[in-house]
Image (tube, rainbow, N blue to C red; front, side, top):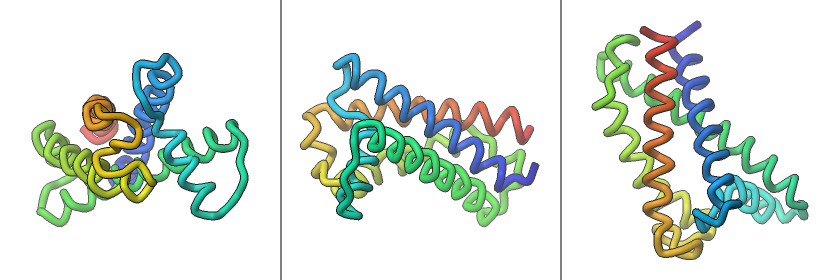
Length: 151
């Protein structure tokens, strides 16, 4: 499999697990928001469509799968631009730095654009912490998938 494909598949796998965990913790009332609901609601609001609960969840999961796959691919491309080979790019330290940037972009760009305000405050005062937990999960799943498929 090509490294870019591996990056996409690894990112998508990590994103699906991240999204499903977020939604499960939301349903259990441990988290105040679900990435699937935020992404799905944003999709329907943006296109001025009506969507029931299942459609919102489905759209949210699909959007999260695609965006996570793209972010997984982007890491591989950035690694190549910086001169790292495919196996050299599987560095927990380097991936950790990348995921910190993803987490910050979620808090300062994605959540505000999705209507959740800066740091996701509309969802709750600890959204930043929920997102940190989810991004740590993303980090380890993404790293594990890359390691299994590239090394």
